Image (cartoon, rainbow, N blue to C red; front, side, top):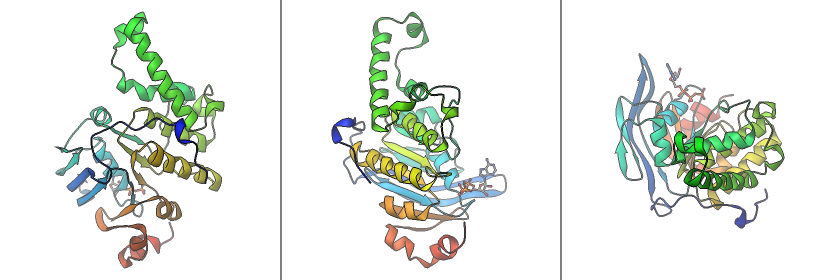
Length: 274
Ligand SMILES: Nc1ncnc2c1ncn2[C@@H]1O[C@H](COP(=O)(O)OP(=O)(O)OP(=O)(O)O)[C@@H](O)[C@H]1O
């Protein structure tokens, strides 16, 4: 895997938390849908600067966990402490403002819009000027638009997608759509980036590319990452620590080498065809 020069990237925002310290602490979270217990009393943490994987068989509660973290769902029990602030419920746009961005299992982009416009849409949440200013297109609104555009261009360079900047994303191969979606999440300048199956549906080459971008986002931009992924090779290569869920419960939480040889994990997940 190649890494591109350091000078091509912008740094992640300074959230005041030193590398290695706790960025997020998930405390005793439980979530049910009617009679279905999606998550039962789960606790784990994410340290600033790490790549954290959440794995488990289908239906284990992984996506539900991401949805709690980014405010999509409110758990019946438990709290999330993010950057020192404890909360149980939060609207997704507040989570973005706090520094949590995500991608989705099935790409969620505006298919008729270009790559550039989709990534620009990711910035909208950071824009200060309201529609009134934008309509009149002058002064502070124009300056702000230019600044946002520069950040977006940096991301386009970083992800090596200059050649598709004007292409409607619906016309792009799946692997590139996933990369654009990553770009849109990066445009929000997150402290914590949540990736829901970033390699799903990709061929080997696309997976290698995406792995390289994930590592570069983490190392060069300093962005902390929590990802769900079914490809065990990718998970074990990329992650600093892995939490394993099964039927909504946590069954392991450790570095990849330890998780790989954990009997409960092998029984629940690694040993079964997926
Ligand atoms: N909106 C919902 N309404 C009802 N049940 C749900 C809902 N979302 C998830 N569930 C249920 O909660 C459990 C956990 O689902 P979840 O999607 O979080 O698992 P997962 O580990 O992400 O699975 P996969 O790997 O298949 O994506 C499953 O039994 C699922 O059917």
